[in-house]
Image 1 (cartoon, one colour):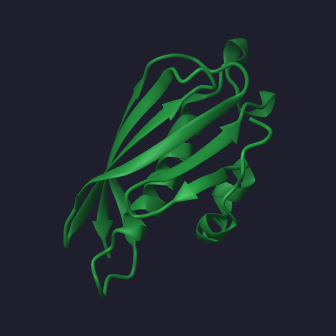
Image 2 (cartoon, one colour; image 1 turned 45 degrees about the vertical axis):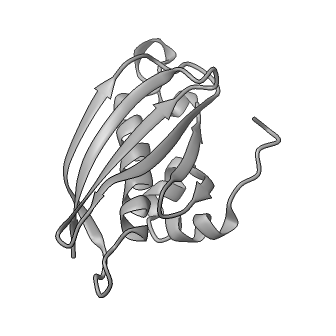
Length: 136
């Protein structure tokens, strides 16, 4: 995936979350209907056996879903905050990239629900995350 084009405008949205930058999240695409990011496997992000830590997947999903929710805010709202998150881990990732794709399931006045799938380089589902974001 070295020839992948990054999204500099989307990166500006993620720059408002310093933790995302520290993790090394790269933005591939952003819009109201879809936000796509990726994070390179790195030994410093792993647990026993060289598998990327589950908390890293959750952080990748949380950041990606937060931007998706932000892009779906109702008029006059100032932001969102995660109030609930549920993660299913399906397989480990030991090399390459974790690529997250977030889509809004519901964009209401008080809550925005976002579903995020994380895939490996072979396109296999690594984790699935459903989040509820409260509208601020």
